[in-house]
Length: 192
Image 1: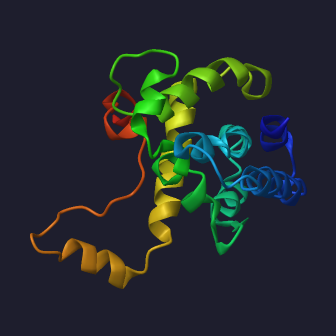
Image 2: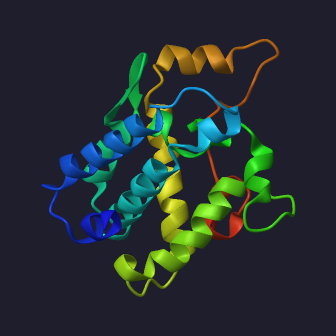
Image 3: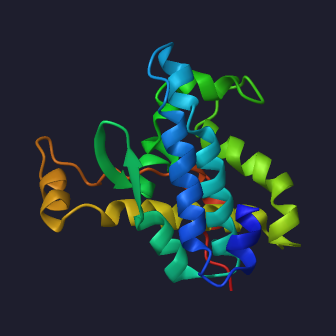
């Protein structure tokens, strides 16, 4: 349903989707005891709703609404609120802390980006109902990831970016969460 709203909505649904994401996230925090991998994966339904809505927005090219989704605040129990892109997007989500967990999902072979690959695979199937006949679903998915990565970078102040680049030893990059687009060069090439 979130993907349908993202694809064919008119921005009036944005707050409703954010309320659903926040509700799912808060529910995931209700139980605080147990094995860490199981606790960390509890927000997975919120990740799915966030991804579905974001993919729908990306497919319909509703860029302001997508940016608002990334920049929206998510409340956290006993912690300061954070931006959705800082809490539920790719490597920022606590559910990926145990990378071995995602290597076990679907296929056991080593993957460079197991969560990203997993989401691509399930939304390639689930997304048919709201993305329609897309000539290149992979491109839409990686566009969503790229824009999320840029929205994550946007959360840093320019002084923080400069400080990270000036670290000793010098770095020629600033860390941002990237998925498949970090290694999958096919969709990075320019297309006329």
